[in-house]
Image (cartoon, rainbow, N blue to C red; front, side, top):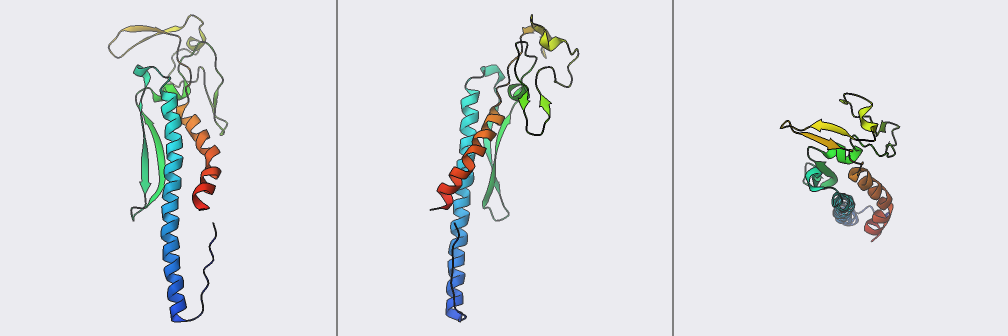
Length: 172
C-alpha cells in the first residue's frame, strides 16, 4: 500500500509532490470508506441470517450506523441491534435444556442462570420449564430461549474478514 513520491527542491517539483499527495489522500479516504462499508455489510449479513431463525415476536431491528468525521468523511461503522428482547436473543434467557456460556474473550461469563434480576437461582435449570407473567398480567410457560448470538457471530465474521478485505481494497 505504500507509495513513494519523489521531488526535487524546486518550486515546480514541490508543487507536483503536493498535488500527488492530495490525490493520494483522496484515494486513501475513498478506499477507507469502501473498507468500512464492506466490513459493515459482512456484519449486517451475519445478523440478518441469524435473525431469520428467530421467532418474529422475539426479533429486534438491526441496522448499520455510519460514523463520520467533522469533514463528513466515513471513518467507521457500527452494526446495531435494538429491541426489547435483544439481550435475551444475544445471551439467552431461562434456558432449561443446556448451552455453553456466552464466549467472551474478557473472561466474563454470561450464560445459563446469570440474568441479574433473576428471582430464584434454581428456576432457570428446572427441566419442567418455568412460568413468567407478561406486562398485561398473563402467565406464560417457557423453557427459555437459546443464545442466538447475532452480534457475537457478526463480530467473529468481521474479525475473520479484516485482512482479506484490507488486502483487496488497499492493494489496488
